[in-house]
Length: 441
Image 1 (cartoon, rainbow, N blue to C red):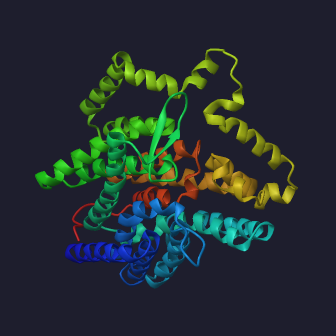
Image 2: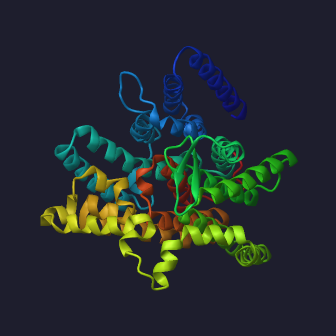
Image 3: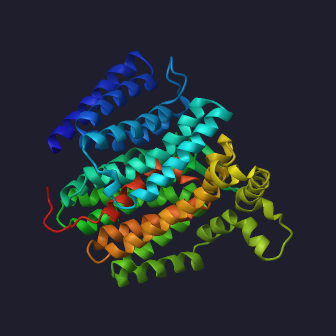
C-alpha cells in the first residue's frame, strides 16, 4: 500500500512537470486531478489520500480558469468529489440509513436540495448546483472517509496524508515571511496578513491548525516512529505556529490557544497544560511585540468595551453591520421562505453571511437552522458517549467541534470543501467509534 502511494505520487509529479513545460499550470493540474478522480473511483482509499495531499496545490489555482470550461479547478473538484463520493458509497454498499445521525443528515441535505433548486430558479441552475455540492461535500466527508479509514492502521495513513498536505502551505508561509512577495491582506490597524498564493487567509489558517491538530493526535496514538519523522513533525509544528501568528486572525489565535490547552487537559497531561498556560501568561505580560499585535488586532473591540464611541456595526471587521442587513432582508421574506427555502440569494446563502449559523437560517429558513442545530447537538452527544471507548480520537473530534463552532461565528466553514474534508471527516471518524485496540491493518 505504502509503496503504491509513493509510486503514484512520484508519477503524478513527473507528469505535472512534463505538462507544465508545454502548457499552463492549471491545465496540467487539471489532468492530474482527473487521473486522481479515476483512481478515487477504482481505488477509493488511495484516491482519497492523493486528493487530500494535492488539495493545497489545487487551492492555489483559484485565479486560473480552465480553458473551454470557464471555471477554476476549485469549482471542478468541489463539484465532482461529492458526486463521485456518492457513487463510491453506493459501490461500497454503505447502508446510509443505518449510520449514526443519518436521519438528521438526510433531512438537512434534502432541505438544501430544495434551497438549491430555488436558488437555481432565481439565479442560474449552475449556481444552485454549486451551492448543493458545497453542502454535499460535508455529508460525503462525514460518512465516506471514516468508512475508508476504519482501523487504527488506516487512520495512521489518513493522519499522515493531512500532515503531508500542510507541507506546501507552511513552506509558502515561511518563504513569504523570510523573503516577502506573494499576496497579503490588510488585517486591522497596521497589521498585514500573509496569504501566500491563496485567495484569502482562511486557507493558511486551516492548514496551520490541521498541521498542529493531526500531529498532536498522531504522536499520541502512535508511540513508535523514527527520529527523522519526529524532527520533521517538530519543524512543521514550529512553522505552523509562526505562520498562524503572522496570519493575524482573531479566530485562528483563539482556536490555537483553546485547542492546545484543552487537548492536554482532556488527555490528562496536566503539567503540559500548566506550562502552556504559564507561557501564554508570560507572553501577555512581558512580550511587547505580542501584546502590541493583540491590542492592534482587537483595537476596535477594546475601545468599544471601554465605552468609546465606536459604531457597533464596525466591530468584528464590519460583520455586525452585515448581519444586521441580512436580518433586515430576511424579515421581509414571505412566510414559506422564512420557514423553509430562505432568501434564494447566492451571496447571503454562502460566504456573504460571514456566520454559518446565520447562513443556514438565510438559506434554509427556521426549519433548516433547527435541524442543523439538532444535528450538531447530537454529534456532541455521540462524542460524549464515545469518550470512554475511544479516548484520543474522540477528544480530537470534540476539539474539532469546538473549532468549527468558533469558526462558524465569523466565517462559513460549510462553504469551504477543503475545510469540510478535514474537519467533518475527522468528526465523523470520532462519531463512528471504532475500537483502537488491535487494529493495525
